[in-house]
Length: 135
Ligand code: FES
Image 1 (cartoon, rainbow, N blue to C red):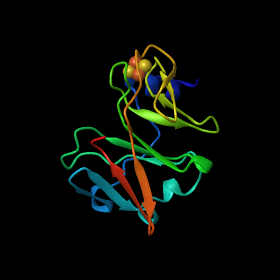
Image 2: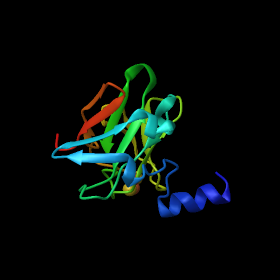
Image 3: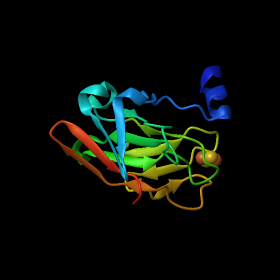
Image 4: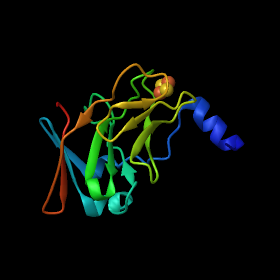
């Protein structure tokens, strides 16, 4: 890990970009946006996170390749730091020094977290992703 990586870990700074508020909407329990407005999601391991606008927590949305799109409450189960997908490993990892790691169903694989992260159902239809954030 280089110096920049070290400081990013100390402060829990992830690589996943925020999806600008003007590109997503919320209707009750659903957060939705057009895939064309999130080009980061076009390839496997790409990710974005909608946040703010009344959401209780950021929502990490990941292109999991053959497994489709997955989404999680973007807070590590250890101390609430944000999360990134791990390229090529079908895993989600905390951006802090603890690096708790989870599988694509949110179950903990390694690290100091005591339990899973919350995963959210995702539907993809007519070019739009719909994430149910209350599940
Ligand atoms: S906050 Fe994620 S491992 Fe500590």
